[in-house]
Image 1 (cartoon, helix red, strand yellow):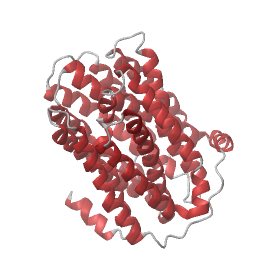
Image 2: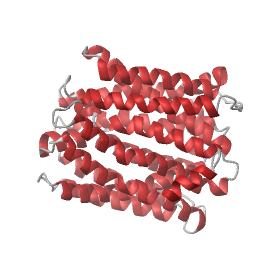
Image 3: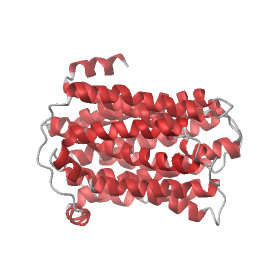
Length: 393
């Protein structure tokens, strides 16, 4: 931890971006794993996936229009307005009681977080001039955010408690946006925007398909996000309702589960830069993810230690996948490739739209625990695309 903070201090503008990403990460991950359980208080559990699908469909549209706002208002003002609106949306989730308005606030939060992540990517890519250091820069960027992914869900479990006090969790999430916006105003008000080409999804998709390496790494990224979508929506509900763990216990399990992101993503990015390249580590990550996810089908005891260990292994795999797909992709794009960055970031809401929608349909025919076996099989498909890419070393 001290080593990471020392490098942030030396990093100058990168350091401020890392800190902004840390606060945005806490804002996002504090509520990330309670959203589905919170929403299940207003709609049947079998329909929660449809809410996620609808909200992320709006996020896809928002990313599609992002370059319009960037060219008109600039990346700084786009980030600032999105941050302010997201603050209001999450504050609404903490204080409102009308189901209709709560669903509106959830949808706004979902799409605005995607926009904020995109704007940070634009800031970071315009500061990264040496592509040979992309793995190191992206590794630190991801590791800082994953500190939030580690402690955010644990904080949520503590705040929600055994009484399911979700309003405290959303209030904490809103407060994390205050220093994020403060950093933007202090350090990026004079940011010089490059020209942002208009985003044409079909044209960008065709361009992406012509570059086989970028296409295959994008598919791997999509599969990983599809995996996250199923996990985020259905794992908390499964642990809380079917297995019988309380939110403080789930917070501990999620803490153990997410440890690999802090331990592995930055070292993996450095190893990819200097030694192996991304292909081998990505394949290993997919195999570990698939095998450990299949094990979840056989777990039925409410053991914090057992669930923590198995879920830890699932994230060993996805930590390698995330670091390698991010590093490989951003070695192939520049800061003014906002159409490609936008499409790459669109994969997340697209996966969070299609993933829950697919699971919702499947749950009409199968039980919830069978989703883990199906998900394990889907992840193995990623090896086909990993085999097709040309490694960077």
